[in-house]
Length: 428
Ligand SMILES: [Mn+2]
Image 1 (cartoon, rainbow, N blue to C red):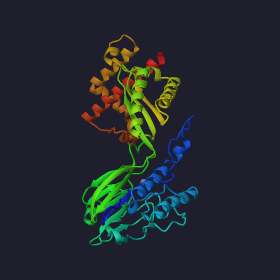
Image 2: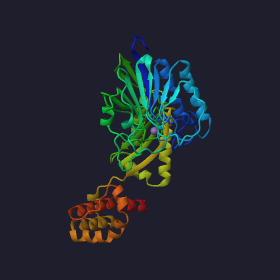
Image 3: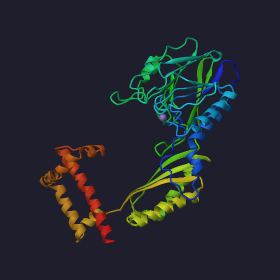
């Protein structure tokens, strides 16, 4: 509410990605598919409603309003309708185009209501709202890739005004392959603005307080790497000073990635028991929203015995979906990842007078014998030299000397476990 003169609020929205499809959307009986498909719209609609409720002076959108070229013109019609709600309340909207909705990428258009101000994509632009002594600076993406520092070219602050910069940027990036208007905190700070409304990084993050530099994060997570609460930032300015920034959730579906670490004694029944409580916590945290949950089971456990065969895995996955439905209808199990292992007492197995024991004793003999290890390295050479990229990606360095020996012993230990599990599987 604008209670005193010189006080106003603005809403900082970033990366709505309107009509971005949800990834891995899996249909199953009772899945709220229509609701799921519409989440990016509903979250944006929530942001508009919030702006109306709070009677903000303006809304800024820091890029990626759209996910990409419109699949249907209806995307534009729907969005114009949302802007018209603001227009009727006399609330202007200032936007920059981001990499997803760069001028060259989203070429479709619709007649926007008069309150909509797309800032130029060819040069930095300043618009002033004199009644609030507010200057808004920004430049949008003309192309999907921009490797220059757009912020560096932004105009000087307007003296005596509250200066607000809108920028779509990856901030400090690798100058070699960063093409999202890279810049630095220092450049932004030195510009002399009061607030930098950033977009591009979907995780909400405050870079610094003075001047205030922040990513609002997207209003709605779109896949399992965009977990937790999502929304926008409501900023308050009094007598030319920023006096508050509040996060306000707008999401309608909240993402969770549950890693359940299992212990040796855990059976499948224990897994369900543990999961139930985790799922209940998600529902509680979502506070009435839908919960999209990826379940990942890890660790060496008894339960693995029942997860060795495809039929057993399928059964467990469906049982977990069933459990989700039972805990709450607002749960959508996005996927179940089973990465369990057999709990093995390798020392005990090594002492056994059977094939497994013999195999493990052989492995140990190699691990203790440097010459045997180096021989092994030679045999592996055609493999390791072919796949250095893959090994690098897996965080495995192909080295030499003592490091190489340690690496070989690690591989040997992993192989031991794998072989024993396979042998048991074959025997069962
Ligand atoms: Mn984005």
